[in-house]
Amino acid sequence: MSEKLENEIIEAIKKVYDPEIPVNIYELGLIYKIDIQEDGNVEITMTLTSPFCPVAGSMPKEVAARASEVDGVKKANVELVFEPPWSMDLMSDEAKLKLNLTGNFSA
Image 1 (cartoon, rainbow, N blue to C red):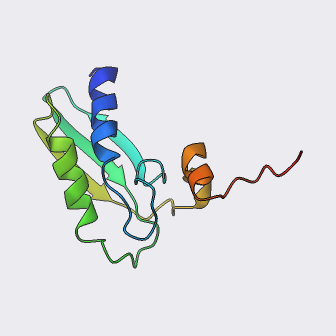
Image 2: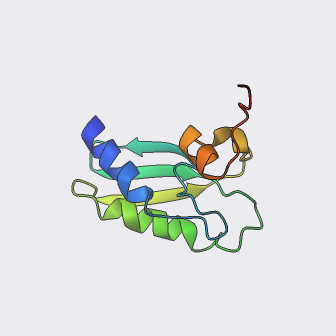
């Protein structure tokens, strides 16, 4: 499928935020894979910052709903995985900057 559709799905997913961290879940690195199939179905693999996250039941549904709103997506299915475990290394530079987690303190 097209790169344009994938980018639109990513933009839709970026509207979902972790309730405890003021950064969207895409920039946090919680989305591991977006697989756009020929029939318009989308398979998304994601994780949570913790298996005990209070939104474990609702966040995957919200991600699927956001992705399903994109024109060209027939249906979105989200698989929640905990392997590999999430770590701060998966965060985008933008997210690290927003949370003041940049490790570059040299002058």
